[in-house]
Amino acid sequence: MTTRVSLTRYLVEKERTTGHIPAQLRLLLEVVARACKGISHAVNKGALGGVLGTAGSENVQGEVQKKLDIISNDVLIEANEWGGHLAALASEEMDSIHLIPSRYPQGEYLLLFDPLDGSSNIDVNVSIGTIFSVLKKPEGHPGVQEADFLQPGSQQVAAGYCVYGPQTTLVLTVGDGVAAFTLDREQGSFVLTQEDIRIPEDTKEFAINMSNQRHWDTPVRRYIDECLQGKDGPRGKDFSMRWIASMVADVHRILTRGGIFLYPWDKREPEKPGKLRLLYEANPMAWLVEQAGGAATNGRERILGIQPSKLHERVSVVLGSKNEVERVTQYHTAQG
Ligand code: P6P
Image (cartoon, rainbow, N blue to C red; front, top):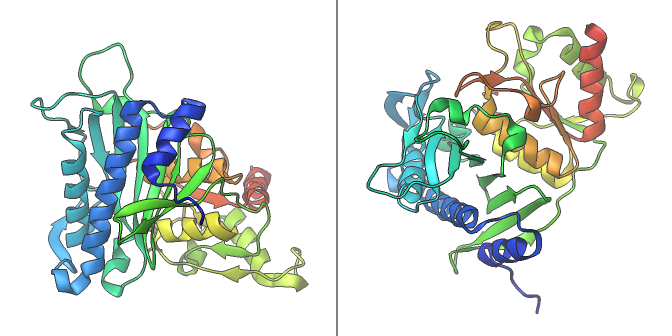
């Protein structure tokens, strides 16, 4: 019988062997995992739990909030406030950062999250997920301000997501590879099911919202056109397309079997660099993909090297199988 390794054991042994996970960070990751279990439970209830539909409010992005967006956000805040591991947190669902109430001990970490990504899929029973990123609070000044969160993704100390699909799976990196943990609902614990995940460097599968095709810039149109020409075109092979419209689900597929995901700039709103948010969507996903041997750029430069200027800053995203991402980057460079 193979030994089941729980998330707790994995984190303890990782700390013992690599020193990547100080006790406070281990506590943070276990608290986030516990919160994801709670969110999974709420998501799985669906209509039976009265959690579907909209909440009648909008978030800072001007997007209609679903009831589960707010429930998930509240679960993550309540789970993380009292533990003494956080200095503050930031969420897609909140305009400004959330300080840890003074009645609780203050920690050294900053937690950023999209509490429920892909929420347009909630009411149609398609996979959604929680994305999270962990930074260290900069030293040298008391308290926490928004500027403390504006660190490039290369400064992350942990990143991950939890996908609520046919299985509930937590995928995590602390900087030495990517591991996946599947929720055992009978035991109520996450169990290690994949270690050292690797993305194939080549692929025949792309993920993009094709309805935006007429709005893309030339390099992206060229790349997708060549994929669509298949084996009779310059690529000499046929491609397939997937688009779940839930970044967590699309990235999980790419981590599992390879592929390339693109949400590029387009001319619908030319002042916006892209749709996806840098700090709590692109950065954690970019680190996971790079840690699994893939690549992640904004079409031109490495996402993890971008210096943020705003908490809810958006960015173009091209990530996945390394050789395909590099081809898209070459097409942008050729454009000048
Ligand atoms: P579109 C979900 O709303 C999200 O932020 C990502 O999870 C997803 O990849 C993208 O937007 C889908 O966008 O324009 O296809 O609905």
